[in-house]
Length: 390
Image (cartoon, rainbow, N blue to C red; front, side):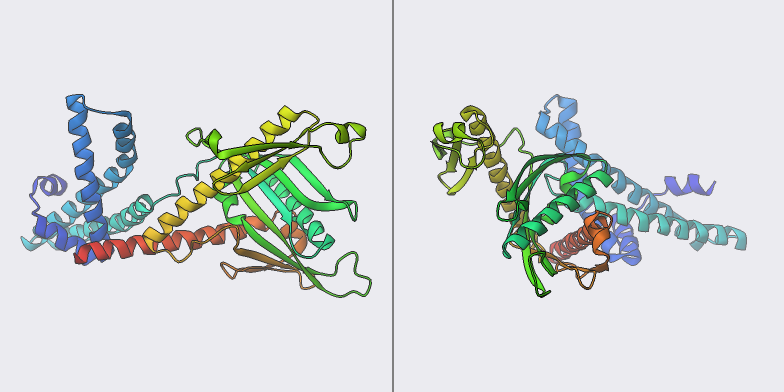
C-alpha cells in the first residue's frame, strides 16, 4: 500500500535536488552530470526510432547505458524518500512511522552505493587499458656490468609475475653483456593476457639497485640502474607514413662466422620526424630483419603516441600524478636491507627474493593504481564543483 502510494506521488525538481543535497553534496553534483548524459542518451533513442543511427552513435549509446541505469536508480530512491516523508507528515501509527523511517534509511544506503557506482562510471578510463598484448623492453643503465646483471633480474621478475598472472610470456631477444658473458644489456619480452597493459604500464621507468656487485672484490656497495619501457601492441588504426622512414642496410656484427661479415643483412630504420632509430640484425635474412625492425619501431612510436595522449588527458584534468613514464624513478631495490621502496607511492616492503620472484610486484602495482584512481576521483569532484559554480 505504501509503495504503491510512493510511486504514484509527484516529485517536483526543487524537492528532488534539495533531498539529494541534504544526503550528499557529491551525490547532488553526480546527479547533475548523469542528467546531462541522460539527455544525450534520450537524443540517441529518438534517432534510433527515426533510423538515423551511425555505428559511432550506437557505440556511444552502449557506453552510456550503465550510467543511465544508475541515474534511474537514483531517481527511484529519491522519489521513495520524498514520498515516505510526505506520508510521515500526514501522520499515522507509531509502527507505520517507524516503517517509513526504516524505508528512508534503506534508500539512503542504496544512494550511497549508487554514488560509488556512479563515480566509478564517470571516472575517465585510459583508452588503451584494454590492450591484451605488449612488449617489455629492459635496458641496463648506469653501473657497467652490474647494471646488466640487474637488468637480467628485472627481466626475470617480469617473467615470474607474468607466470603468476597466467599470462603468455616469451623472450623475443636477450643481448648478453659480452664483458662477463651473462647479464642483459637489452632484453625484450612479449606478453599477452587479461589486463596485461593496465597492470604493467606503471612499470615503465628507471629501477635502481643497491648491492655489492659480483665483480666487487672489497665488498663495497654500488648503485646501478635498469630502465624499462612497456610497449603496447599497436592498434590497427595506427599507421606510419613511408615518406617518414629511412632504411639503411649494413653488415651485421657479433657471432655468426664469415656469413655475418660478408652480407648486408642488418637493417636500420630511422623515423625522420622524431629521429628514433631501430637496428635489427638477429636474422641472416635482410628482409626478416627489416620486418622486425619496422615492427619494433612501430611499437615504440605507438607507445609514445599513447603516452602523449595520456599526458594531454592529465593536463586537461590538471592531474599531478602524470608524467613521463620513461624518465620516472620507479623503485629502489636495497639488497643489504632486503628493502624495496616505490618512489611514487612511498610504499616500502621487505623481501628481495619474493620481489624478484614476482610475489610482491602485484602489491606495488595495486598501490600505484589506487593512487591514480584517487587522483582521477579528485579531479572529477573538482570538475563537478567548478561546473556547479558557473
